[in-house]
Amino acid sequence: MKKAKKRKNKKKIANNYLGMAAIAVVSLFLLGALALESVNMRERVFAYEARAAELEDQISNEEDRTKEIDELNEYMKTDEYAAEVARDKLGLVKDNEIVFEEEK
Image 1 (cartoon, rainbow, N blue to C red):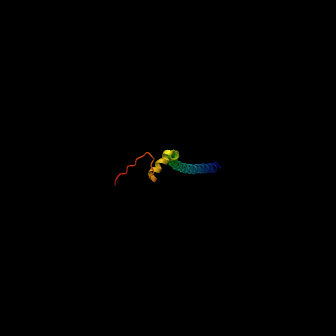
Image 2 (image 1 turned 135 degrees about the vertical axis):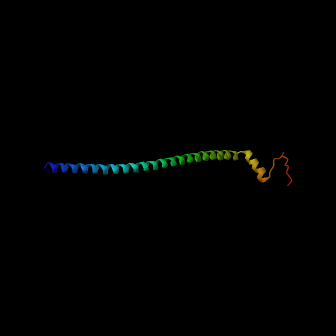
Image 3 (image 1 turned 90 degrees about the horizontal axis):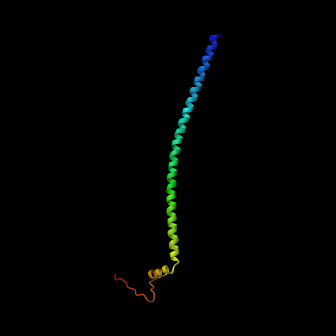
């Protein structure tokens, strides 16, 4: 009877080791998958950070452009701009101006 009990105990111990080995293999597999996903996530984060920096630059450029457009819009409301356009586009001159034209 003692021998039969010892055999059962050995089988239980063998089954326990087999179960622990299976759990260890599954755990290592999951750990490896987690490590790969971590690397992929890190790459995505770097890509998103680079894209965010690029978008920040675009925003800055567009803000500068908007400022230039606003300044031009304000200039276009002045009499100086109207006189400039009248001279350049329409060929108009003021009463006391003398116009010199270059020969071509």
